[in-house]
Amino acid sequence: MRVVIAGGGTGGHLFPGLALAEELERRAGAEIVFMGTEKGIESKVVPKKGYQIIFLPAEGVAGKAGLSRLRAVAKLMASVLKAKKLLGSIEPDIVVGTGGYVSVSPIVAAWLSSIPVIIMEQNVYPGAANRWLSKIAGAVAATYMESTQYLPKGKTFLTGNPVRAEVLSATRENSFGLFELEPEGLFTVFVSGGSAGATSINKAVTGALEHLQDMKEHIQFLHQSGQRDYQAVREAYRRQGYRAMVVPFIYQMPEAYAVADLVISRAGATTLAELTALGKPAVLVPYPYAGAHQEFNAKKLEAFGAARLLMDNELSGERVAREIMGLVENETERNEMAARSKAVGQPEAARKAAELVMSLAKLKKKA
Figure: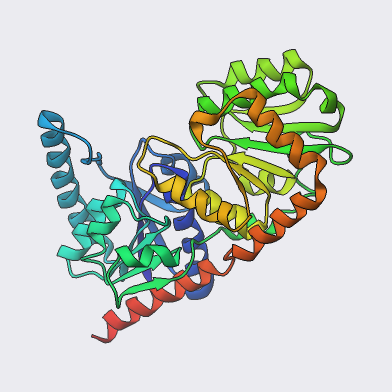
């Protein structure tokens, strides 16, 4: 079976595709080809995982007007034509879209070529691209029951959001050395604003350090800062005298989760799928500038008692310090949060999504 997985731009749209690819390889010996853009995270991560990737021109259309919108539409049309030609040479049994504007042209090209299509929807409230693509898809793999009301009935299946096997298998004992952190006696806070970092989170966490002086000897940090803020974040920890490993980008995310006693992060759907599959206590700070997707996702976990929600405009050093301090000192609450998180996790999502892909591909072959 030959499968094209289209999507990327951010880790949230790439990592579910990688998890699905691993499962399809394991279960069906599938040959996997990725399609994405040269600017997205997929250009670096996919080759490292040993998969072929083909780059397409892509640009978001939503929110643009005038000449910018015309240019984006023209680029989209050119991308569809290029994707259609490429699919003709690859001859895949099925094309899977993992969301975002990056996946639009390959999905449209597959539909025009009568190739079966599945799209994956990771959020509680589906994005504009997936709401439109769901109309031409043969099936939709949804993460949350709440999102099914926005998607076509009869072809939407609740699979969960696939999580990579390595995320589930990384061990705490073998991960501390990778980040040069103390393996015993210290509470480890993992901070991540996503693959590009988040300045608001970076400033709030480094601002919290002066309010956490009393527990300095009992706490350490692993901080994914993004390239832009790397030097400033690194210097803040050094100046305050905290034990910390600061890196612009973490490729070894499974190991980062493994060492974490508490995670402070954005609330992207893939991040939440990974946190809940592992049962990690978390303080979630939804990204405020891309609709309300992350806020919807985070509120669902907060309502279940699986995480704490902190809006971006509420961030301050004092507030973040209070959240950290409360969870460090209250082991009972932390353990309860971890248990509730694990209860809503879906570690079998990759298997369910792979079975859906295999079923649709088989139906096409029989036809």
